[in-house]
Image 1 (cartoon, one colour):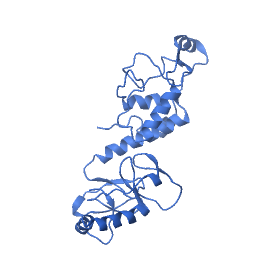
Image 2 (tube, helix red, strand yellow):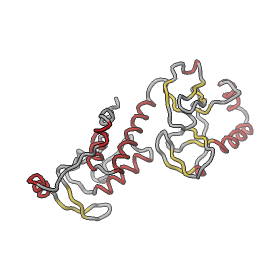
Image 3 (cartoon, rainbow, N blue to C red):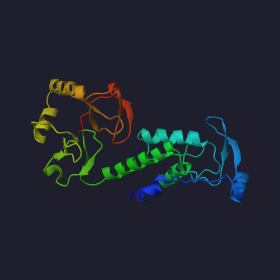
Image 4 (cartoon, helix red, strand yellow):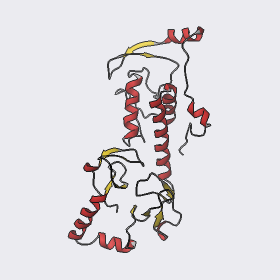
Length: 245
């Protein structure tokens, strides 16, 4: 079961990063004396290892990558739909990182970028959990909303609670206006020429996210796209509409 380690804190608690004070006093001297210097295996810069900062991997006996490179790695994994299983960045380890420790590590660093990454990671994990619930469907217009449709196939039209546009629960696509699900199946299984005509028209307005497959409607803007469901970043011109069977 998915647990949100930080989401149930008060707003004031969530906004306060964990800060390690090394400025004055004996605790500061102790912390500094326990810090070691090593070379990052990615950027080759020297960096300090503090025993007070949690490391997201519990298997590594020694840190080999600096915070900057590790955050870059986590950012790439989370924002490119690879967040479900994030492996340790150390080539000699490759253990699967625990999501709770990833949250704790990013919050301890306390920077604006890290806290924004915490929010996105939390949202993506929640989306993944919700997607596994019986009767759940994402709005196929990519507005970012999803909901549980209790009637399921018995009432296939799903009206989004956010954008109020229609999706088809049976086919997990934008609602096929003017056709029942049976008619849509018949049309979709027609001759090759009809299929090609349908795909050519669909590609003008709709494309499928290469990360999660959700159908996206584009009505303007630049070529760069960012899927609100899985967070995948891609170019509209490099994607295509894919029918969901």
